[in-house]
Length: 323
Image 1 (cartoon, helix red, strand yellow):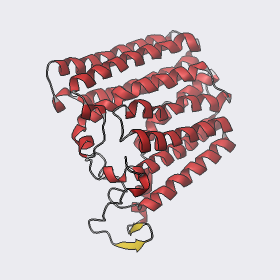
Image 2: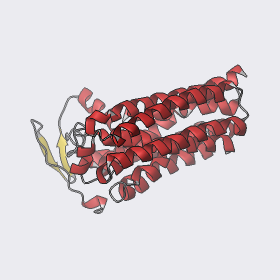
Image 3: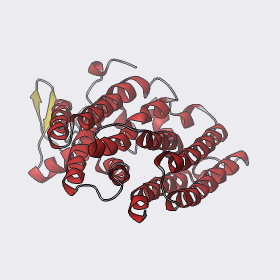
Image 4: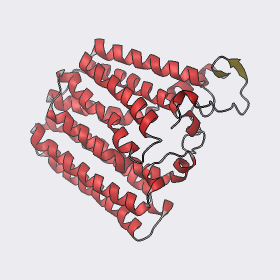
């Protein structure tokens, strides 16, 4: 991996009118276009999933309905923190985003935002989120959010992503922090229950993301990013995804004795887990039969993994209400 500072900004194309600045090009557009571009830098669709794994844990920590202001404050702070990490990730990946179909329309790839502006925006959101969570919630939650931000940008984006096929396995830990932040925002201390859920998201991430990487395998290969589906046979990738799915389901059931949940959670988690395992075994079975590429329907696994995680955390929120 080359030093991030040495990555060249892509040339301006299309009809934009650039003006030379000390840091590259400034692209003109309407105020609405500018706002949309900066919002896009935060990757709102990814943040939705992070919020889904934050708020339900607050219900679990409270043993019922948490304080409404705390929920609002954590949601705002969480968005700002994740948006900061995502904007800085766009800056780090600005060279490879232009090479991938899935990311070619991102603001830096289309030159609707300059690299310098993206860095300033990302750092500003990071400072704002740290202060917001510290004063509006508590400093433990603030520091955990900051740690997640640094881990995603530095450890995953700058170190792991372009160096190892295990990038998403270890780098994916950044996306697990919302579980502990949701807990500490209510209790101001850590416990085993949020750590179990942290591990659930950690184990869930590889089969979830590798399914997406299987679909866009050519993209990652063109960008020279060694995602596992680019460097290993699909049969091996599907096998790894199945193993991680089994581990995810087993870990999800561990919350029952650790958090002393009612019966609703383990029954629901077992049903969801069985469906998740069926999908993982379907993909692996197809790969073993020699099915390749799009015919494997990896996006089916990807979308189902989203549904699984969302419904699992809905159970986490509902269980204390039922009890």
